[in-house]
Image (cartoon, rainbow, N blue to C red; front, side, top):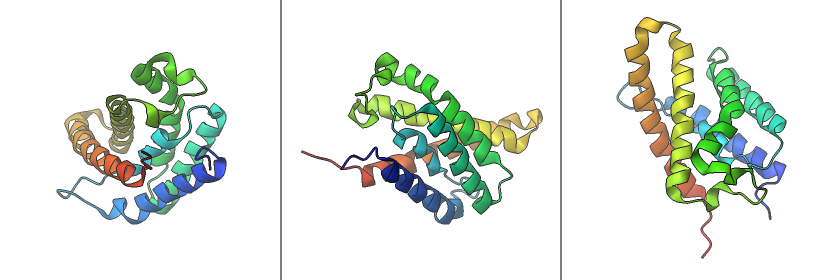
Length: 169
């Protein structure tokens, strides 16, 4: 069975939303760090799908998260922006290889995958916390939140991806 079928992609997104809403939003490391693992969506979404479907899926996923987490459209805005700039991040990380139809993220070297994942998380969190603060005088607070939340999100995301990856020998 091909994991890139729309039903499997939808199930993975649904599982990420449930994990974010019911598990990660309840975690508060050090009192202020709450990891956001739904950014894995950008990693798991197939690269050869239509870009409009990616933007739509990102918008709907963010909207569902905003409804459950009562976050005033922050997740929707951030995830839609991230879906829009995802090809640029992929081009920076993987080069022009990602534009080939046979390209699969999980078949690339680990350092490229981790770089892509961490860059996506870092940019997402910077946009999220900048919009949350909406005050340039809180720049140090924004950087502190971005740094610590990105580290927690990255570690948890790598653990989730390792837990659910299928290793075939």
